[in-house]
Image (cartoon, rainbow, N blue to C red; front, side, top):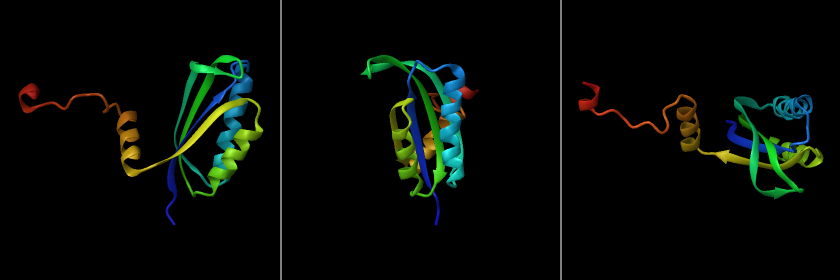
Length: 122
């Protein structure tokens, strides 16, 4: 069976120190790898303003993982998110082939650039 492509984003509470934040990220990375997931891409988006207050907080540390894994891992990952009080929000989505292609092009800097016409290339 071929593994599915997923992307998960979670927001950590802003009151954490850098060490505590890294420990939380390492915890969720190990949950993925120990359950057979292959990490494709990882991005620490840093401290960002939230669209609306969550638990009386206006900012949070955003972390993204893109991975390939069997579908059974999602329930385990969500359970770990819910058990960890440092996580104030999380979302995991399944990526179709178009989303995977878009993410690859985005990482390679090809998204948002206009294609060169033959006249511009000369």
